[in-house]
Image (cartoon, rainbow, N blue to C red; front, top):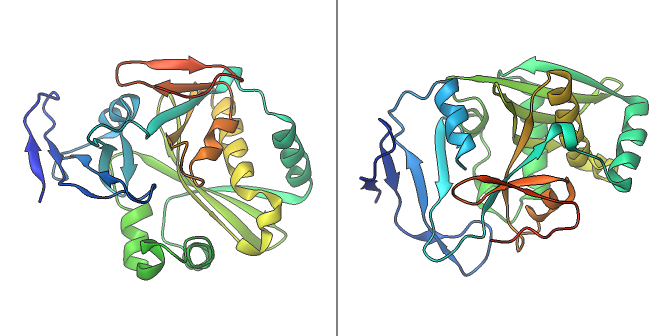
Length: 250
């Protein structure tokens, strides 16, 4: 059962869940702080929430609030200073040759859902997401209205859809919400290519950041984010620059 968090946050009410199993690290217990789902969160509020470490899932804004644990660290890439490493340059060089990009407004498209379903069943077959892949859960996760703009950035090989990067647009940057791709083309590094594409798009729009969500050292699915340097990490009070060789640690 959620309990209301009575600490002031402007005019937004926050609710704290009870403890539940951690989704990222086996054996740990977690708590989550949610913005009141009935609150009106426009693009300006959503950006402010992101700037203080919140993330969006569907229409809900949340951040971890676990007892005695700070493993989930919000990170973002300062676009102007980003320099791809050797592997990222190889990835871009290979995929730029024959992949075509299309940016679309958020919307329910059958080919998107079919790709998402294949991706979840292949990559998350042992998790809760694979047990509940429906058009309804997909819509609530990636298409729920939230007061801002979302783009679906597609990559195509000829006529074949290979990946979709769900991306929120803010005045200070882009937020990488979720990426799903064709598991038959995993060797192309399509997840990496999606982030590189979002960094290029932010640069094209003259935006400052690409927000990557939570970096978790002990989670294989989240640890890849440290490869994008330099990074800025939210320490609960401010964003702190982390250099190319500096470990992320608070």
